[in-house]
Image (cartoon, rainbow, N blue to C red; front, top):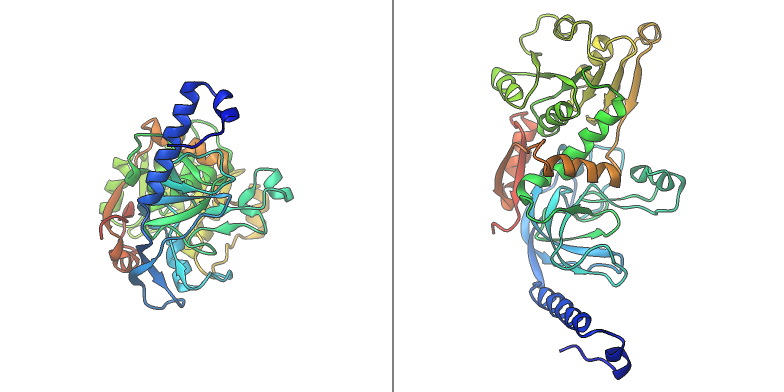
Length: 380
């Protein structure tokens, strides 16, 4: 029973006091249920062994929540973090992952926007300073002090993970946590990219790398936003998959004898926008060729060491725009999740146990993944 002073008791109605008691009891019960150790996949060095082992459960800071991660999507960024092939050092040792969906089981003393028992998502952007010019303008992902889940902050490839309460995603009650997990990065990222393209309903958008984790969601978001979607990928199976997701047309780069011409023919003059989620440097450069005059090429995929090449003469005469699009902000996250909650976007996923992360990375490197692999972090 919650102990109170006589002043405090008389200052509350009986119902408010009972509610306070219930809240305290729920919080206490949740905290008591948190174990001292947990299962996680950890690596100590870049490209080193991915070890499935027991590690301590972290304690949230005053501004953080502790999430009991039920499921976590696996992103290509996680593969880069493990390999260490980006020009941004990772925290070592590291627990990767940044598409974690679960339940809030503890929170810091300063947290007011989450309650114990709420559903929450762990995103790539774990936290930012909230006071620099980028944070003030809603561009928190560009904050020089950004803290990144699964990169500079231990992420969601574990059973319990911490997240800054301001940046953590709010997930509606009753949501399928396995299916919403990829929305927290892949979904938000492609939704933001589509907004960055600045298209109007009825215009063509090309998705390069359309059958992958990001591309499969980009097709659906594009259709939900009223665009005509051209999917680009390689293989008959991937083509069928893209068309089932709602693409209006598909071009197979493996069988096309002239990719630029085939894309421009399929879109009657070239797409008005291109979303490059492919990790092919050649595909990125080709998109600058087939995009329609006055169109926008959006760079999303981050192949290590790649360069986007566009002939200056053609770029000027066609008046094309080339824009980079990073992960979305809090508003983009809320909107992307709402599309999912409304049933306009679904996550094509395959669920495997947490311990199978190394196998997922192998498939990812071989380009054999359609949709998104999701780790069941409770399957131990």
